[in-house]
Image 1 (spheres, rainbow, N blue to C red):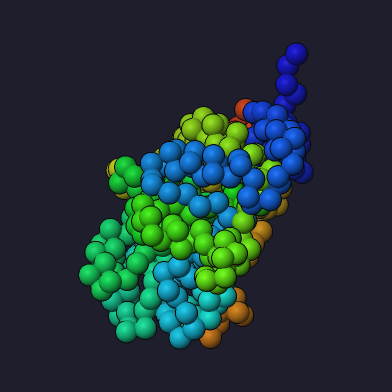
Image 2: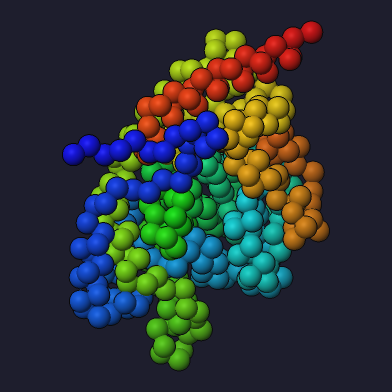
Length: 378
């Protein structure tokens, strides 16, 4: 019996949501249901956490109920409190920055390096103060953000770095997994992520003491009455889903990378589109394929939208963080981030894309890139 091809038509050429194939999740959930313990105290939780730590090669993983909770708990565990400042890239989406406000701290928005997701070290140096308590780096869309230079500056100043790797499961920076390079890495397992449990997240760290603080904070202080905490626990059935789907993550990464290579090969030789850059030791996970236009990507985005495949930048009105009313008061000049946001296009390359869908996207890339190049000619 053959599996039918995913739905494909001109109006809806590609479903940008990816649902992993069944891999025994129902059996795993059945075991949790039979045990009867469905909360964050279910026996499957430490098994899931150990599997996560093993896959990423770190000492500890703490499972929580969302990527936002992972960031919030990590900030709290690092001592971020009202009056403190946290550096955050201007390219950050709302879920990256909102936990700073939840802590009562002040987000200090930092520019990125030109044509890059990395924090601009010059801007970081200019914005460090005695109140700076932490910094967040962001491998957005699963693309590497090599903050090695900035990390040296922050480490010298005693500022811990958190990687918001919520879209970066399996991304590598200088040969190491994103989310394992600094003090802590925060991940989401929301429905759209490579490791999807519906809702959920986790924190990775090699710092045992920090892991314990995060664990206590996210588990109501383990109800011992000595330590304050909140209820950010992950439910047992969701951990069971994650435990099974983790096994297929490596295969999913291979397929995404192959699909991305297929679409990149469709770019004309004189294309005004190039892939978002990364280093020779870096590897994107291809949460999305990200293309950069030589000038504004708006006409190309409009072309993809008209064809039925709006880029994420269009669907979510992606702009630098301070364009959002909630963060307008924290705006500073970030010209590199402005240019990057205006030039990017994000396209799906997930494993559910059929050969016909991949070919359709490749054809659209070629047609729209050629039309864009023609418009640019004098």
